[in-house]
Length: 114
Image (cartoon, helix red, strand yellow):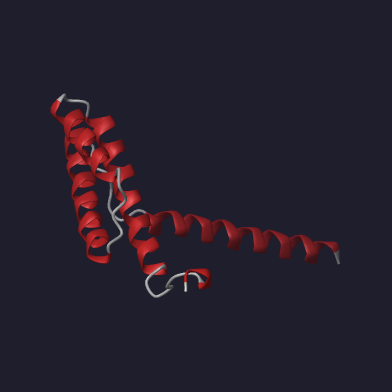
């Protein structure tokens, strides 16, 4: 009886681990470029696309544009790692701003304002 329990546990563990391995491969959209400048360009393109989407919903946050400017300045200075990190952070904020705008779309004002 204990052999069956152990086999079932090992089988379940194998399924869980294979599911985790598959999830990791799905989460990455494309392989990261090995060139830091190219990685920055990809990150900046993603941030620009996210900015346009956020702007279409009225979900741009106040200081996210400053992150984009800092990313461009870091790239001009040759610090592509910092530039990519800033562009990634800006893209995250734009995506979150878009989601926030969508979630608040038809909420309206609180009752006490009427």
